[in-house]
Structures are given as C-alpha cells and as structure tokens.
Length: 111
Ligand SMILES: [Zn+2]
Image 1 (tube, rainbow, N blue to C red):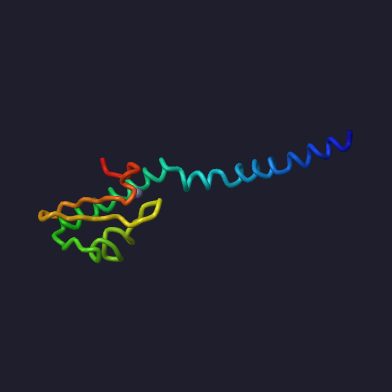
Image 2: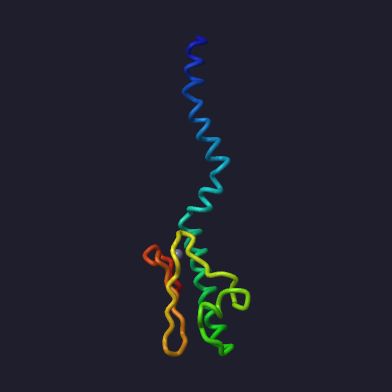
C-alpha cells in the first residue's frame, strides 16, 4: 500500500511542478507572446509613428528621424514591433506617411 502511494507521489511531482510553473509564470509568458496583444501593441506603435510624422509635417519641420525621435522630437525613441523588427516608414511627395511592419502578414497593419 505504501509503495503505491510513493509511486503516485513520484508520478504526480512533475505534473505539480508544471502546474506551479504555469500558474506563476503564465500571465507573463502569455502576455508577452500572445499574438493578439502583440498585434494591438504593434498597431498602436504604427499609429504613434504616423501621428508623429504628421505633426512634424504640420509644424513645417523636415520629417527626418532626428526631428521625430529624441529629446526635441515627438517620441523619445523609435518604437519596434513587439515581435521584433523595425518599422518601414515611407513618405510620398506630399509628406504623407505610410508605416509598415515586417509582420504585416500576421495582420500587423493599420486599418
Ligand atoms: Zn508588428
């Protein structure tokens, strides 16, 4: 009888460890790698970039990275996609900005 209890305890130990790990680390892990959350964060980054370039244009300053980012700019630093990768910023002749993410295929695009 005692032997069986011992076997059950040994068999359950790894499962309990995994459960404890998921409970303790789960929110952090899923928060970081949740594709939906990453997409939402990415789109808000792109909106911010677009806004900064538009504000820069309206103020009559040259739309350069130096004017957009930094202590004198509209954002402290250039954001990157939560999944990694820098954004591609394209300006047309009128100064209209298009921001694209390297994870565009995963739905990381502005509506
Ligand atoms: Zn992205």
